Length: 300
Length: 331
Image (tube, rainbow over all chains, first blue to last red; front, side):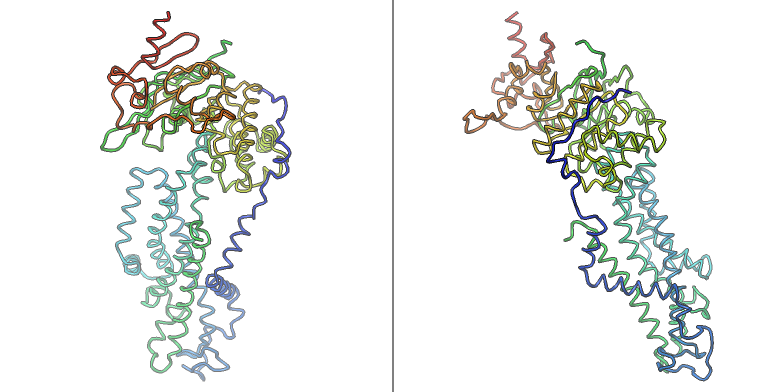
């Protein structure tokens, strides 16, 4: 290998500040994100919810399955802050325990759907051709069904149960990711640094994983957050309809479903799970909006 | 100076398909040679096919509607157009590499600078990761980056344009390619940084004996850097000459126009001469000489038949009937 004889030194003025002291990206992102009050509020709400989900059973005032026959269907009281259900079980404790099931089902289904959809979308966008046609037309077919209807159809085919609800919700999450990731890939594919990667002889696999995928992450994060909200709603709806968790298990949708029978005498059984579902979905959507606005350089 | 032949492009033709409307020829019958350790300038207006020529040599047209439809590109005796994609992938970066105009967007924003260099090195050598990392730092130092370790740790958005271009050059040179294609490497930089980058490229040429194809529309850069120059117009070579001859005695009316339109300090001229009109649309090319509509010497025969690129001796070539006539009478 021929050796370089001397080193050309950059002149002084450039040498002083070779690295522009730009704000680091995470810091700049955080600063920008903090200006969006609603998104911050949503993030705080979700953070608390996640903590409760993680340590919920220890924090819960009662055993979520323990009946209290002296307090059937009693409204909110100092002993039972959110009241009790038809077996005298503490609603607050059940909601806290139920967050595990509800969030677990929706998060895992979105993770699965996002993973499959992302891989399909990125490959379709990068390679194009017949693969792209197949993925995109397949997505169109799935998109033609309303989300819940599709999930019900899938559960009806493969039977009820938590795992099957996860599968059903994952299936209808795939096309949205496939579409979004394809278009993100198409725009990143055009960028100069991908061409540079090719000009130094990078393999396709490497270009996909190190050059294309990181560039599409923003779209993925935003869509992920948005879809979690949808997935919670779908999972709760399926449980409500009796396709998901066992009715005896603490699950927000299932609680809503069994509480419906007592809506006349103990409306708190419907209000609190319903309110919680509503707030959680809203929080995920607001967080998604906030992230999109922060991550998108086009929106100031 | 008959150095060893490095790159031999013969009658390269690249077409861009436009769907149902057929296709346009972006590069037409382009032939030129680059010898080892030589800097060849390729000049012309925007859209005259300079960059497409470069991408064709690299076989990087895959993602564009462009397609090479004729000719041969020999790099050290090997026809690149017959290479498989896999062979070509090995050649890129190892035998020929490329630097681009926008250095800032040439680097992957999601990777640290050193990681990108290491990647390029690992692709073409048997070095271990640690050796590659050392080599990367050495390359950064050699392209004149002070504190290579710190720059290596930074992300591209933390670098200035000049720094990014240095990093790009380090990356392109990390596997000692024999040919470096520089596509407007200094256009996006301010003049002082531009001079530094040109110095760096000249050093590479002098010390490592890399052949450089320097694509630019800046005649000042050409005068400073190149030994030979090719002038392209509308996808064709219109003139080829050693650099001094081109500036002292441009032959083709287009070259004359280009040189006349370069501003000169202290000349007291208030308005610069310019070439009237613009480059013809590739899909609506005039039948004869492509420059005829803008040429003030054009005659009827210029508009009817396209003149060949004639050899005029002394390493000069020119595609103009008038010049050819004149040469004939002189002889």
